[in-house]
Image (cartoon, rainbow, N blue to C red; front, side, top):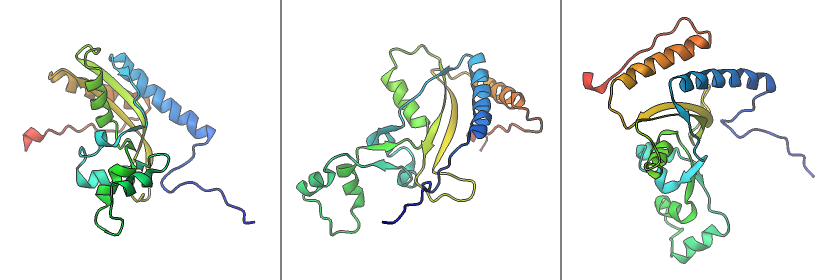
Amino acid sequence: MSVIKPSLAKGTRDFTPVEMVKRNFIYDTIKSVFRKYGYAEIQTPSFENLSTLTGKYGDEGDKLIFKILNSGEYLKDAKKKSFDFAQDDNSNQLIPLISEKALRYDLTVPFARYVVMHQHELTLPFKRFQVQPVWRADRPQKGRYREFYQCDVDVVGSESLLNEAEFILIYNEALAKLGLKDFTIKINNRKIL
């Protein structure tokens, strides 16, 4: 009997207790600044309906979404629908038959879904932040991972440019509280083009 050597899935990593202390300090510091400015934390599920995620990132982005296979005998349904397994170019037709859910690619699309689903409960402007893991099914290169944390802070229900100015204050304060001194915050706007 062969012995299976434990290993990590490519593009993932473990965090030691010492690393977790440092990570939690960073997360707690950033979250405290968000809360100070009136942002509320939300969390969304790790996976969404595939139909919610696809079509939002373009063809290339859709290819980087980790699809979750339906549980049970998912191929039986594909065979019932007379799917032609012999054709090479019809994988996009097979996906909806075997996968209805996917791991979130970022936090933006799940947040948009959240706002639509809870629109009658939210007081506008709604200021939210999220710090949660996301997944991308690409070939990881040095310093890039398939699983990583994303930090988002957003306002919906207001067109005021004061929100944009507030974001600059938030970023500046969070980075300074983390002990960073030599940083530059750059502003970009498509209207300039």
